[in-house]
Length: 165
Image (cartoon, rainbow, N blue to C red; front, top):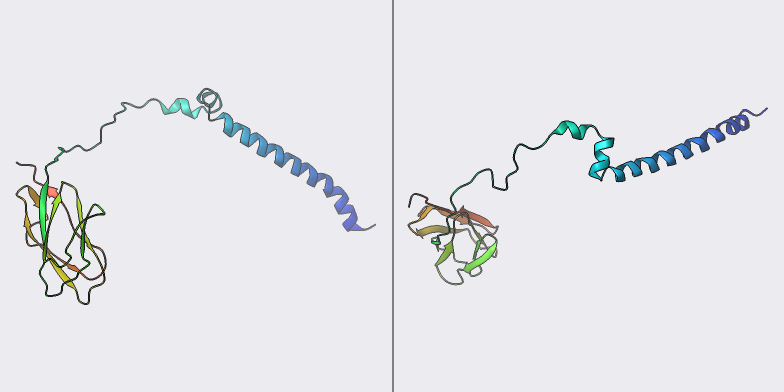
């Protein structure tokens, strides 16, 4: 008697039975998952939902509130190094707000929370840009802040307005 043939005869029935059971279990799993999408059936099938309880209070307000300041201010940026660049642009919140384009300074209107950035073509040498003036309501950036631009997008500052006025 050949052991290999005997083994295949005995295990072929077990193999087909395992495949059938596996397919049935996958179908049952999919059906239960679909049923759990219904809240009424989920309460019956899953007792954990009963233990969760109800939220204390639902709010739509943000967790931290601060006064909304919608005053517009301005920031003046100037190129203070000897190097100049024609394609140097100023971005506010990712959108172009102006370009130096042959000018040595640029005034940009800003609001509280705005992000000021500088970007452009690769300069021959580093370009130093300074904040030369700000409106009275602006706390940050401060007049005199300098940023060095060397061909990669550079953040000047996030704008913060004073709240004590």
